[in-house]
Length: 62
Length: 406
Image (cartoon, rainbow over all chains, first blue to last red; front, side):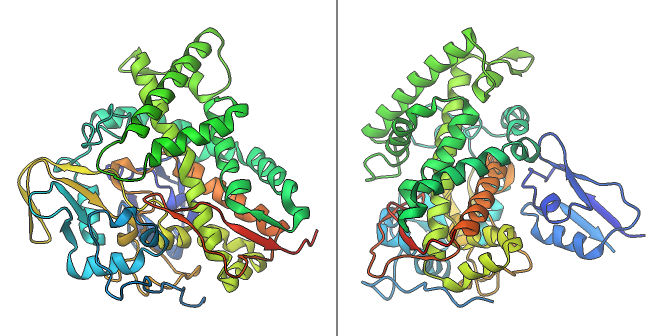
């Protein structure tokens, strides 16, 4: 079972994840990232988000 | 894809040495990459005023990452030697800072910004209408300055007919006499007072007659369960003004001075408009129009990269250097719109991440899209010597010529 997580302590709302991988991430009213409930995690999108987060706030275990 | 860009060594010295006021030199602003690289390689933690100086530049991505993510050790509290009133929210550390950001972030969230897209598109096209028939323009004066400034004035609720006066005020505020960046000079102090007075008058007007704008929204906001004081309102609006009025202009002139020379990159955007968001990220990384963030004050004896830092030292992270650090990015001197990923710091990082980054990205995206749709082929006339302003890298006049295709 793969696992995708956002560390809310680290997220400061750059919004790279929900711009680049909108199937997995959305923004809350502050512009911080939240996960989109999904059954299947697209691995490419997940890694894109991990690699572009300036805060290193996203972790993914395929 | 894409050729190596022309990061030529500065003309006068093959071995550029980063000195205290190097960042104020137009030739460094024009071509900062060799200075950044030399600094990373030889003095990545540089007490630039010599021994005894409190100002320390840092150049490596790793060190900048560490400083921006450790506000307890590297504090933003207070005026950081700039001799001006602390500005909300940038002159505060968590947890006070967090409260201000929770109040301000929703005004600049991507969802709020998306509502502005149609209007920004309209404004961009109105500007292009004014010069497209001429086949040439001063991109800075006729597009890169008025577009973001009018967008911003509208959001804030500042009178659009005063655009020129506000632009002038902004230039005095940010650049002053241009002789020092350590503390405010007289021109800057005066401009600050002028802006505060204008903002106070406008806030009083909004109190009597609310409008659909940010000043009115701030008036009706609460912090700790109480309305903001007049002082807090002026401080927050003042910072929004300083931060909002210049940086997109800087970015646009950096981008178009690059695209006006690098025809392959320009053509890529014309042929494949889908690449625009990635082109923006890559040009933000490479150009890093905002070269540094405000100093962080060291709160206790520590060290960075083996160099001792003392309490009270003021650390200046050079974002442009971090974004071009070959230790963390392959071929940083290549502008590659297809770069798979990079955690660039063009908008800073950590808790002080640029509040307006979502607005900036929207303005840049709409600008590039509308311009290239209507003016796909353009270049900088041969023999043009561009004048670069420093710290916030900006081309002051950017002549572009183009064939009319519409």
